[in-house]
Length: 114
Image 1 (cartoon, rainbow, N blue to C red):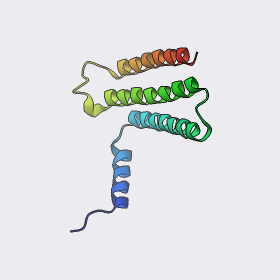
Image 2 (cartoon, rainbow, N blue to C red):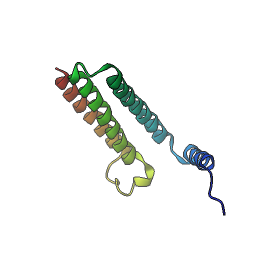
Image 3 (cartoon, one colour):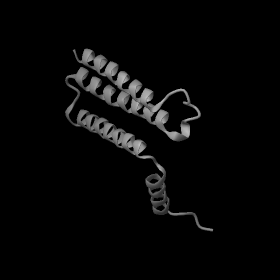
Image 4 (cartoon, rainbow, N blue to C red):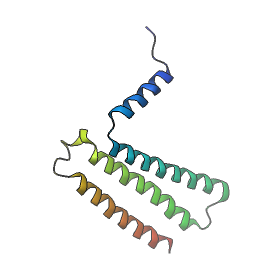
Protein backbone atom coordinates (compact mmCIF):
# COMPACT_ATOMS: atom_id res chain seq x y z
CA UNK A 1 0.00 0.00 0.00
CA UNK A 2 1.51 3.29 -1.08
CA UNK A 3 0.88 6.59 0.60
CA UNK A 4 -0.55 9.44 -1.46
CA UNK A 5 1.92 11.91 -2.91
CA UNK A 6 2.11 15.54 -1.87
CA UNK A 7 0.62 16.66 -5.18
CA UNK A 8 -2.36 14.32 -4.67
CA UNK A 9 -2.92 15.69 -1.18
CA UNK A 10 -2.61 19.29 -2.43
CA UNK A 11 -5.02 18.79 -5.32
CA UNK A 12 -7.52 17.03 -3.04
CA UNK A 13 -7.25 19.87 -0.49
CA UNK A 14 -7.81 22.49 -3.20
CA UNK A 15 -10.77 20.57 -4.62
CA UNK A 16 -12.39 20.20 -1.19
CA UNK A 17 -11.77 23.86 -0.41
CA UNK A 18 -13.30 25.14 -3.65
CA UNK A 19 -16.36 22.92 -3.46
CA UNK A 20 -17.22 22.92 0.24
CA UNK A 21 -16.11 26.32 1.56
CA UNK A 22 -18.79 29.05 1.51
CA UNK A 23 -18.09 32.23 -0.47
CA UNK A 24 -18.02 34.38 2.70
CA UNK A 25 -15.21 32.29 4.15
CA UNK A 26 -13.26 32.44 0.89
CA UNK A 27 -13.49 36.23 1.02
CA UNK A 28 -12.22 36.27 4.60
CA UNK A 29 -9.40 33.89 3.58
CA UNK A 30 -8.40 36.29 0.79
CA UNK A 31 -8.27 39.11 3.36
CA UNK A 32 -6.14 36.94 5.66
CA UNK A 33 -3.78 36.17 2.79
CA UNK A 34 -3.43 39.88 2.00
CA UNK A 35 -2.74 40.73 5.65
CA UNK A 36 -0.18 37.93 5.92
CA UNK A 37 1.57 39.11 2.75
CA UNK A 38 1.67 42.66 4.13
CA UNK A 39 3.26 41.44 7.36
CA UNK A 40 5.86 39.40 5.47
CA UNK A 41 6.73 42.38 3.26
CA UNK A 42 7.12 44.62 6.31
CA UNK A 43 9.35 42.07 8.03
CA UNK A 44 11.54 41.55 4.94
CA UNK A 45 11.83 45.33 4.52
CA UNK A 46 12.89 45.61 8.17
CA UNK A 47 15.55 42.93 7.70
CA UNK A 48 16.91 44.50 4.50
CA UNK A 49 16.71 48.22 5.23
CA UNK A 50 16.54 48.59 8.99
CA UNK A 51 14.06 49.56 11.64
CA UNK A 52 14.49 53.32 11.70
CA UNK A 53 12.11 54.75 12.90
CA UNK A 54 11.41 51.80 15.15
CA UNK A 55 7.98 52.98 16.35
CA UNK A 56 6.68 53.09 12.78
CA UNK A 57 7.88 49.57 12.01
CA UNK A 58 6.62 48.21 15.30
CA UNK A 59 3.18 49.79 15.01
CA UNK A 60 2.79 48.64 11.41
CA UNK A 61 3.83 45.08 12.18
CA UNK A 62 1.67 44.93 15.30
CA UNK A 63 -1.23 46.25 13.22
CA UNK A 64 -0.84 43.46 10.66
CA UNK A 65 -0.55 40.75 13.31
CA UNK A 66 -3.58 42.05 15.22
CA UNK A 67 -5.58 42.45 12.00
CA UNK A 68 -4.78 38.84 11.12
CA UNK A 69 -5.91 37.68 14.56
CA UNK A 70 -9.14 39.66 14.30
CA UNK A 71 -9.75 38.18 10.84
CA UNK A 72 -9.24 34.66 12.15
CA UNK A 73 -11.69 35.35 14.97
CA UNK A 74 -14.23 36.61 12.42
CA UNK A 75 -13.70 33.51 10.28
CA UNK A 76 -14.24 31.22 13.25
CA UNK A 77 -17.46 33.00 14.25
CA UNK A 78 -18.88 33.13 10.70
CA UNK A 79 -18.04 29.50 9.84
CA UNK A 80 -21.31 27.52 9.58
CA UNK A 81 -19.72 24.44 11.16
CA UNK A 82 -19.18 26.48 14.34
CA UNK A 83 -22.79 27.63 14.59
CA UNK A 84 -23.38 25.40 17.61
CA UNK A 85 -20.62 27.13 19.56
CA UNK A 86 -21.63 30.66 18.52
CA UNK A 87 -25.40 30.16 18.45
CA UNK A 88 -26.10 33.49 20.18
CA UNK A 89 -23.87 35.51 17.82
CA UNK A 90 -25.24 36.36 14.38
CA UNK A 91 -23.04 36.95 11.35
CA UNK A 92 -23.90 40.65 11.44
CA UNK A 93 -22.94 40.87 15.10
CA UNK A 94 -19.61 39.12 14.46
CA UNK A 95 -18.86 41.54 11.62
CA UNK A 96 -19.83 44.54 13.74
CA UNK A 97 -17.49 43.32 16.51
CA UNK A 98 -14.75 42.91 13.90
CA UNK A 99 -15.21 46.48 12.61
CA UNK A 100 -15.34 47.94 16.13
CA UNK A 101 -12.19 46.07 17.18
CA UNK A 102 -10.42 47.28 14.03
CA UNK A 103 -11.39 50.86 14.85
CA UNK A 104 -9.95 50.54 18.36
CA UNK A 105 -6.83 48.81 17.00
CA UNK A 106 -6.12 51.55 14.48
CA UNK A 107 -6.65 54.28 17.07
CA UNK A 108 -4.07 52.57 19.30
CA UNK A 109 -1.67 52.16 16.37
CA UNK A 110 -2.01 55.82 15.36
CA UNK A 111 -1.43 56.85 18.97
CA UNK A 112 1.66 54.63 19.18
CA UNK A 113 3.20 56.11 16.01
CA UNK A 114 3.08 59.48 17.70
